[in-house]
Length: 160
Image (cartoon, rainbow, N blue to C red; front, side, top):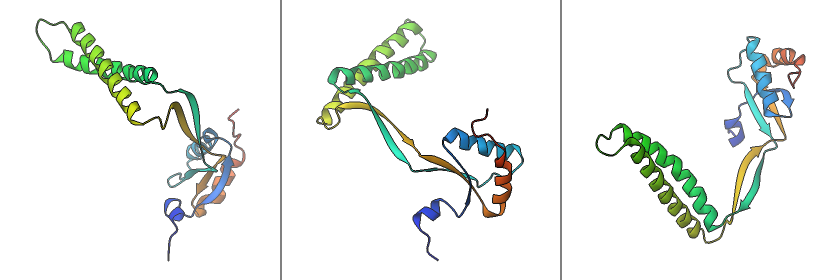
């Protein structure tokens, strides 16, 4: 018997309900669990997937440097706090933390500018991506499908 790639990832299960949002599908599975339904092996499957990329701004050298510096401040702060726990001497903990924050910001800003320069202008924008689905299906093993449908029949999908 041959197995298609999709059936290896998604076993033969029965769709018992469909929802417009992931939160509604998650609520349905939570409802099944609350009713002592055997939820192990239950799947929530996003159908009609799309990658949505929202372009936020143009990427420039100053923006790359600022973004890198911002990340470096956090890295430097964590490193400085860690280092201050193990340093004893004439330098105060605050001075160690401030130096670490400064050098973290400088190093990460420099790294970000170099990384941006190496792209050669092939991606001159800042964006955020997310995966969205047209709908979400709740699927269970065939032996439990009818019981799941009964339990979900009276469930208001919005929870109101």
